[in-house]
Figure: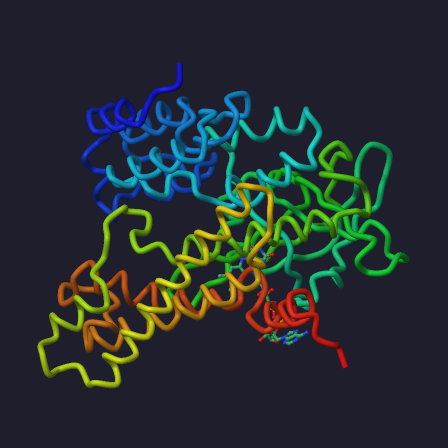
Length: 394
Ligand SMILES: Cc1cc2nc3c(=O)[nH]c(=O)nc-3n(C[C@H](O)[C@H](O)[C@H](O)COP(=O)(O)OP(=O)(O)OC[C@H]3O[C@@H](n4cnc5c(N)ncnc54)[C@H](O)[C@@H]3O)c2cc1C
């Protein structure tokens, strides 16, 4: 029997380890990403994670046979709110559940669904995306990583770059060229690659934030079973379109959340301005805050409208519009927040800064990537010009 939200709440309140409320808890990565390469440090947290995922609460709206709880949209929102309330709002919100599972569900065989979806839902396997190449980022359709059929396998050779969290992932959704003679959009296929296959080399790249979120991944004659192809051979571009749509929506959804993974609301810009004192914030900055808050409200209403339309099978807002506007609004918010914090806004480490200040510095730096990942803002504007506004190309 499906539990109601009161039962879910009382179970979570009674069973969630208190340490999960600590945003610096070392098991946060394992909770968000899962997978075999992020072991838990705390047995209580791991036990809780196994029980919650076994109940299907990490992906409440997935069918039970795929590892979900089979709940409708309203009940799913309730479960997510209850998880956030106990400090686990980002439970398994990752590439696998948000971006790759929709493709497997739509294009995968029954066997592929049975194999991959429950392992994602239980957090046993973590996924990453292998799209961009050293000379092919925006021009994704020009990708050169080759896959040549040899019996029951493809032999894959090439390189991918900016692959987030690949060093901690088990599987990659990899875009490869299977027909070099076809027009560029027509010769692409999608493979699901076990990252432990011989011939794969993964090198982390260090970032401005001091973290190493990205990897450079090379494939040297890597054998991938033909059975691991998702969708038809050379039809990968169609899957890419669907996948990018989910990626763009997920990027915006994750960036715009005011609660983040900890489920703890941070102070609004207005609260920060009030803390600074009545005359400390210049009038033009207050006007910028007001403008941003109004645009955020309009954007939230637009996202709600888009979600409602999508639930009834209609398109009303192109995901490129959401991605472009969401990235802009988040970057403006981070800039304003940094300015309002003064010297505290550039805190990096040490006793002189509180936890919120340290987080704010890292989030400010992280926000630069929002207008690049999942397709740059310029590319979103090109798409909007062509597909939404139908502007002439010359
Ligand atoms: C945080 C983050 C996470 C990422 N995660 C992943 C991942 O997991 N997997 C993965 O494969 N990739 C990932 N990427 C890579 C990302 O998809 C690429 O960086 C992006 O597509 C841009 O490609 P590029 O870096 O090669 O830039 P380029 O394509 O070289 O673009 C350089 C500049 O030229 C502009 N430009 C290029 N073409 C046009 C055009 N036709 N019209 C107008 N302007 C243009 C761009 O907007 C950009 O400003 C990630 C990137 C970031 C920042």
